[in-house]
Length: 413
Ligand SMILES: [Zn+2]
Image 1 (spheres, rainbow, N blue to C red):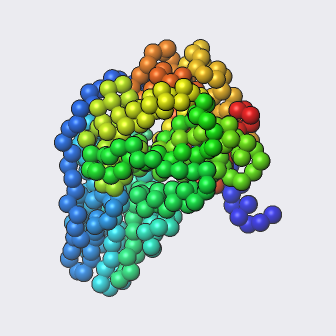
Image 2 (cartoon, protein in one colour):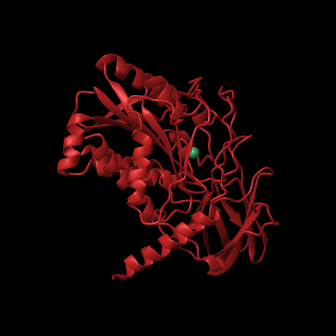
Image 3 (cartoon, rainbow, N blue to C red):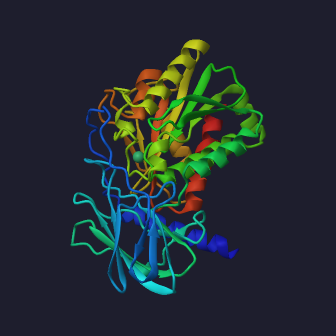
């Protein structure tokens, strides 16, 4: 057995064990209808902070979030990470780069806004592209019993070479552009701009398939900027639909899949914790449709249905949270392909040895403010919110995306 395979199995077992011990995770509470008119946001000032003794720290790049930095003493730096506005889910997104005129080891203290706590295990990178988890010996986040840590500490070795520190891999605009450019080389993939974000970024949709739009699929991701693991699962899902196999070719002749991989491009570019440039959680705006991103997508889907006379039969919105979970629609309700989502989750999960999926159908029969609810209640699309754990191993994420696509293609044959 190859060493990579042994390591993969080892980490998968650890991951599954950690899911078991935290099985009491109950998911999010009932979704509240909240106002979604634009609110002011606090922009961070882009700069390179020159701290004493030739130490520098900078947020002067896309996707970064760093709202203050100071040197506390010879071995300790403090960084301040603040949200774009409040109230907000406490999921502090941070990214910055550091260097020093002479080599030295220092501790970084992460401090957050008053109502927040530490969430993301730090990743480090030498080039800003390839990130890996910081060594566990170099990181701790002390917490009182039963409470989440308010602060966290990371030891870094500084030198003249830039060191990148981030909450998750930086897969921002550039990664998405490169990935989309690769897909657009395929002759069954095309692009459409459906609107502009508040800051003027293109809102883009890819069309995948050569079908007649009678039965359509919708996939979205990155409503919430730090939710990189969900984005990675979406990529694996879409790449499987795009592969050159008899099954995928047949699927694309029958169905068109519409994809909006970057639902919140402004939030991603600005390193927001959760909101768009209007200071709003777009996944609470699918009834009001006040914000440009959900508004543009809803208009696109509704026009598509009107022009083609077809319908959306499936939709998935990829996110990340503490652990893997599927938010689905109450199973008593029937859309355009009754039973598709429960079957799909069960079949794809069975392919991962020992994995028992956490499925949370909505308790009520009523429409709510999320994308998932919009897709089902407005279009009849069988829909789910596909949540991937913050720390789910990357190879497992890839497999989950792939298996979901394979079983979907089989179920829709
Ligand atoms: Zn989310």
